[in-house]
Structures are given as structure tokens and as C-alpha cells.
Image 1 (cartoon, rainbow, N blue to C red):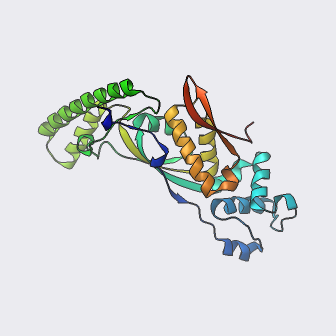
Image 2 (image 1 turned 180 degrees about the horizontal axis):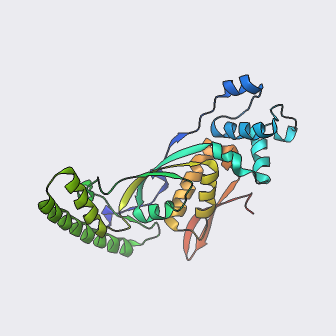
Image 3 (image 1 turned 45 degrees about the vertical axis):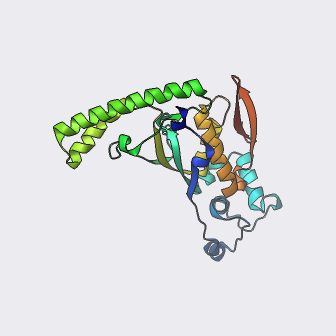
Length: 255
């Protein structure tokens, strides 16, 4: 029975877009060069613009890595808001996105259950990463029951309201009320570097929702490749909580 359910995992986390930096224009305007690119370079430029320190007077902060280390050590995280990264999350449950939208500094575009027919889409439930076989079967049974009720309500509404566009939308919005939090969804999320750091700080911890934690670690690993000077300060470790092993991360700048 459990071949129809999936778990939240990091290979469904896709880095779609990120900040680009015009280093030629920056050099033309200020005579300044950097050994970084993208959002890291932009953050350094923004910081140097505040103090007009393009001549790099301090050897300790002459490199982008040194500059970022100093900025985060003293808590000047505002310059990190200039760099952004956009992710596409697939095969995550609605319960995950219900929590995700509490991070108010992100921008979201999520699959619409009013425009997508969940029955025709063949949507699967997404179970908690630590669910055992028995729990997975219970989730699948509940999912199949809910999907059958969804189809009954949808067909009843369509028979009454017709197949016109507005009638179909109204039928789906009524039918979706019986769907589970476990239903698979997809969402595009854009955030600046500071917002992503806050997400990781809050969600890659031993006490966070486990599905959120799995995604937070996956996001961190992608961001460490994209902007290592901004995200390499996180120490990733495995801890055991309630008998379940989970991967967590903590910044060396955590206060």
C-alpha cells in the first residue's frame, strides 16, 4: 500500500534563480574590485557604499570572505537583504506550506487547488519523514477516503453548476475542503539572504517540524554552493531527538 506515498526530501528542492552583479559597472563607478560574484559581491558593494570604503583600507576585510565575516560578526545583516535566491519546492505537503508562509519576508507562488483538479492530477500524500510503515498506511487510507469524497463533491457541484469556467472553480474550491494537510503541493519561494538565514536559524533546529527541517537543510546546502561567504558559517550536525536522528545546523554567529 505504501508505494503511493512519498516523503519530504532534499532532491525536490530546486534553486531556480539568484542575484547577478554587474562588476564592470561597479569598477567603473568606484574603481573597486572584488573576488566574489552575485549576491555576495552586491552585499559587499552595499556595505562599502555606506562608508565609501572602496579602497579596502582594512586588510582584514579586503577579501569578500573577510568582509562578510566581519559584517555578520558585528550583526550588520541588513546588507544581506540585497542578494536574493528563488527556490522551487516539489512534493512537499500542504502542512509544510501552511508553516512556511509564516516567514513573512518571503514571496510565494503556490499551486492553486481552485485551478488544478486534485483528483485528475493524481496527487499523492506526503508523509512525515519519520513515519513508519503503519503510519504511512494510515495516511494513505485517509488520503484515498478524502480523494473519493473530493470527487463526489466535485461531480455533484459540476452537475448543478455546469462546466463553465467560474462554475468549475467554485466546484473545486468547495471540494478541496475535504483534502488532507498531507496532499502534495508545489511552491516557488523568493527571499533575500537575510530572510533565508532566518529561515535556516528557525527551522534547521532539533525542535523544528521535521519536514521543515529537512527542507531548511536542503536550502542551506544549495545556498552554501551559491554564496559560501554568506552561508558557510553554519555547522551541520546529526542529533537524536525522541529516538529519531535528524540533521540540524547552527551558525557560529548565533547569539
